[in-house]
Structure formats: structure tokens, C-alpha cells
Amino acid sequence: MMLIAGWLVHGLVALVLVHAGGSKIVRPPKFVVENLTRYHLIHMITWIGWGEFVAGVLLAVPYTSPLGVLVASAIWGGAIVAHMSHGERYVPAAVFMLMTGCGAVLKYAHLFEIARGR
Image: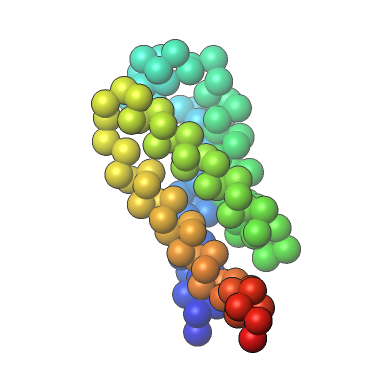
């Protein structure tokens, strides 16, 4: 049951990452272009988009999901830093980072049992 819950949480996070990354790659929304221009990161929009897209795909594929957790956490961490450094709301990115971690704990609970010696 915990495994299914973990996959559901990671599925939602993966959908958000793939959508956000894909939109930055194909046709970024106006508000995204404005924000990245204000952050002086507009020249990196394609790289940011590909990073989000790849993180979502890695998270959704069972074999690469552990790597996806690490890459997605890095993406969310970067989003949190970017928003905090400009005095903006960072709670949505923090919630998605928390969801990424909770999904990992639910999916890989057996690793915590091994670490405790059971």
C-alpha cells in the first residue's frame, strides 16, 4: 500500500515537472519569461526546461526513479533559492520538494528497515 501511495505522489510530481519543463522548452508562458528576465536567468530558460523535463521522466520510470528523486530535489532546491533571493513566495516549490521526499520514503521504506538492521 505504501508503495502505491509513493508512486501516486511521484506521479503527480513527475507530471508537474514534465509540464513545466516542456512548456519552457516549447513555448514559455509570458510570466515565466518575465520572471526569468528579472532573475537574469532568461538565457538559461531552455536548460532549466530540459532539467525539469528530465527530472520528471527520471522520477516516473521505475528503474531510474531513485536518480529522479535526487535530480527533482535539486530542481526544487534551485526554485526555492531563486524565489527566496527575490523575496517571492517559495512555498509551492517547498511543498513539491516535500512531496518528492515523502514519495521516496513511501516507495523505499524497505531501505530504512535494512538500515535499522531488521
